[in-house]
Structure formats: structure tokens, C-alpha cells
Length: 293
Image (cartoon, rainbow, N blue to C red; front, side, top):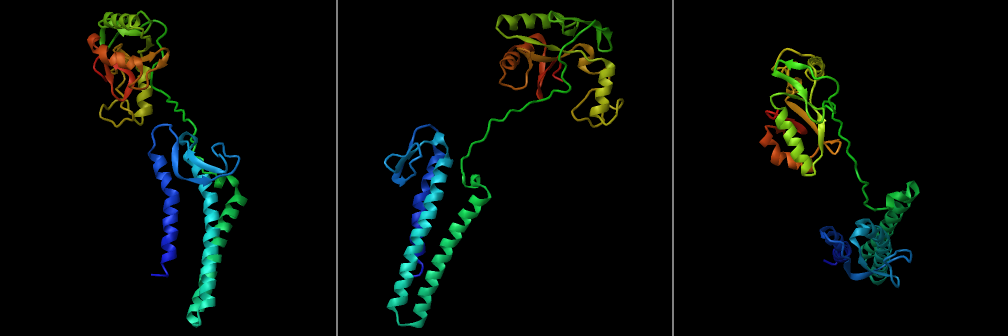
């Protein structure tokens, strides 16, 4: 029991020192976390008062606490090493048994070795790069740019007229977006209602048969005739796409393609577009058509 008692005490000390880390991770608000006991701190620490740190601001990051703990840990190693050396020395001097003297010497060697390992690890990391000892956890803001290679930005020129899937002919809407004449009134009405509600919707919709063919070649490993051919993403045969027939639209909100379901234009369209015969393709927030494909 006497042999494991020092290790139990060390474990208790370490648990007491590091337990605030887990408490900090649970904090949701920006309120300061009051330490159960003050910790020594360097004068340059902005939260240091009178040489002691009594609280930690979670907004400053868990790293500030861990940086302080690294220094404390090295100091703790030195203190424990001294304690173990003293214990080993007393054991060596107060015992007449050879085995006890050897145990005392072994305890002293172990304490010195442990201290040497701790100091060597710190020195090695500091020599390689001092930032390795900096535990600040600060992730930069990530910006994700989605490229909509297949989305149609706008329609220009003269509508193609009658197509395979639009016997009434393709005409221009009030925003120059092309639409089949069968649905153009519904599309114009929807755009007007949206505008009156403060929703600025623009976009394009028409893709020629030749453009559809090139898209099939790209997405379907060159196949332009087999409707069951594997495509990534799914791509209709030339002449059969809603985009070829003025019945599908790639919509923008305030000049930018709708990319998320929380976009204000998407929210409005989700609630109102079905009234005008348009439905969303779930995998593409910007894509709206007469059948949702």
C-alpha cells in the first residue's frame, strides 16, 4: 500500500487540476468560469490579478487554460520529483536493510528520470517550434464556394419557339427568362407576387438540345441515347429535359443562385411556387420545374 500511495496522491492532484477543462467545454454562454481555487499566472496574462488567476473567460478559448496548465505541469513535475527524492533519501538513510536502501535509490533515480523526461519534452518541442506548445484552439472561418456548373444563369437572344415538349412554343417572361407559353402567365404572376412581397427572383431556364447533348456526354460517360444509362448527376436525354422545353428554371435570389433551404427566396418559393405549378428538385435548391425534376 505504501508503494502505491504516492501515485494515488499524484493522480488526485492531476484530476483536481484538469477537471475545470471539462467544465469549460460544457459552457454555452460567454460568462466567466470561476476557478475552484486560484492558479498562479504570469503578469502578462490579461486575466491575472495579483499573480493569481481566479477565472477563465471561455471566449478567450480553452487554449489559454491549457497553455497555463503546461507551465503548471512542469512545475508540478519538479515539486513531485523533489518530494520523491526526499522520500527516497529518507528510506535510504533510515533503513539498515540492503533491499530498502536499493528501493530508496531506485525511487530517487525514478524521480530524476521523470523530471528529465518532462523537461526534455518541453525543451524539444520549444526547440522545434514554440507554437507546438501553444494550445490556442482558433479555427478560421471557412468559406464554401459552390460551383453550379449545370445551372443556367440567364436566357438571352430569341426564344426557339416550338420544341418537342412545348407545342405552344417557348416565349420570354417579364424578366427575359424563357418559358413555355402554356405556363408563362403563371410564371409572370409568381414573379410579380414575389416582387410585391420583397422577394427579388431572377434566373434562366432554357438549354438547347445541343447543349443538353454535351451535358449528357459529360455526365453519362458519353451516352446520349440510353435513358437508363448511369449518369452523375442525373441528366435527361437531349430534347427530353424540362430545360429544353421551357418548363424548368434555375432561380437566383438578389442576383445569386439559391443554394440553401434557409434562403429567403427558397422559403418563399417553397410556400408559394406550387400555387403556380412549379416544384423544387430536392437536390438542387435553385432548380424549379413543372414536375420537380
